[in-house]
Amino acid sequence: MTTSRVSGFYKLSPEERLEKVAQARNLSEEDKQILSGAAPFPLRTANAMIENVVGVMSIPLGIATNFKINGVDRFIPMATEEPSVVAAASNAARTSYDLGGFHTSLSGSIMRGQIQVVDITDPYGAMARIYENKKEILDRCNAKDPTLVSLGGGAIDVEVHVIERAKQPMVVLHLLVDTRDAMGANAVNTMAEAVAPYIEEITSGRVVLRIISNLADRRLVRARAVFSTEELGGREVVDNIIRAYEFAECDPYRATTHNKGIMNGISAVVLATGNDTRAVEAGAHAFASVTGRYRSLTRWELNREGNLVGTIELPMAVGIVGGATKSHPTARLGLKVMDITNAEDLAGAIAAVGLAQNLAAMRALAAEGIQKGHMALHARNLAMMAGAQDDQIDQIVKQAIQEKDVRYDRILELTKQLQEGAVHGN
Image 1 (cartoon, one colour):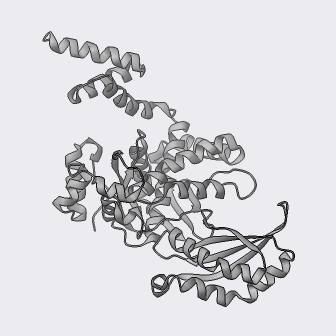
Image 2 (cartoon, one colour):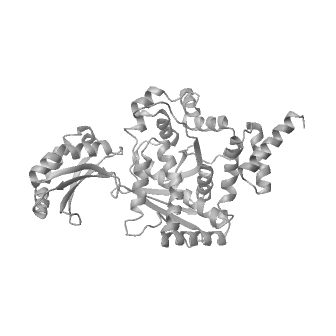
Image 3 (cartoon, helix red, strand yellow):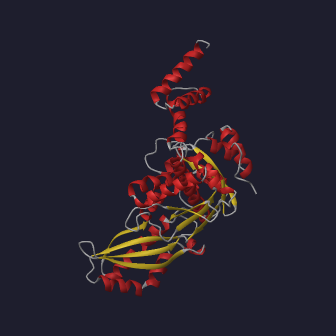
């Protein structure tokens, strides 16, 4: 089994890192060309994905290491423009590796489709008639996607809700659809639209909306890990991490930034695998608010051995078939690099990254402060903006960090000094 523990991975050149991953996952030369950007993303493929295409925009793709998930070592592709995210996730995962890594579970692969019915004189009677005709409703839905049904999925149940808070009472039918290894938006929306005329016939009402819900509360992923208190910096640091979590749990202003840090990791993996970042983010933030107050998506506590235990739970509507997961060549390779063959394992890996990312952020806040590591990486971006050459960046960043002055005007000044010195032979 390939280990995700690669000593000094961050010290390697991009080419050397790619070669390490390629050897571990048996990537072809064509695969390496795509990942490295040597084989550009075809404009015709982009044109088939969205409208009014004029080009493509590249996002850095990094590999998080040290992730052991349900006993399996995985390299985690992360697509993000934000400094420190990949390194932070890798470092946090390392403190859990020798204690068993991450353990995950998924509540199921069921998505909801909502059908809104208005202009109903007897909403509760309409509710009853819908339930009376449930079998016919499900049969009509499943007739629209025999392939999904053949794979063990399809429409499995209905829920009916009467909403009385609107100007006029409305009935909302929830189609519960097992989408298996697909995210499921296309399948669910197709079923909802197909059955809408029959719902109007049953209820004597008028259907308005027929659309999937991104609050995937029947598709919850959970991840758990134990992190070494010693490797995190000792008991005082861990106590501060728990206090930071308690702050987020009690205060929505802190919880918003706390959860944003979680999504730094989650969205990076979702994007790298061609899944819908907006759907996952919307579902996560809605789930954080289901109690009526916006709260932390994670929980942190100490176990009997004095080590830190973290857990996370959130909706995770992701898939490995359909959409950009198949049409985008880099997204396909993202799944190959992870060695992922089903949506359940993908959801678990994403949740593990979110948990690790949260720990890394809180540790930085609880110990040296968030800026120390983040600004060191930010300084590299500033040096590039200032026109530094590749072989000058490290020297400029080192000087700025030593001076504790990571501002663009100082980086620009250091860049000019170095380049002028090189011109004059100093």
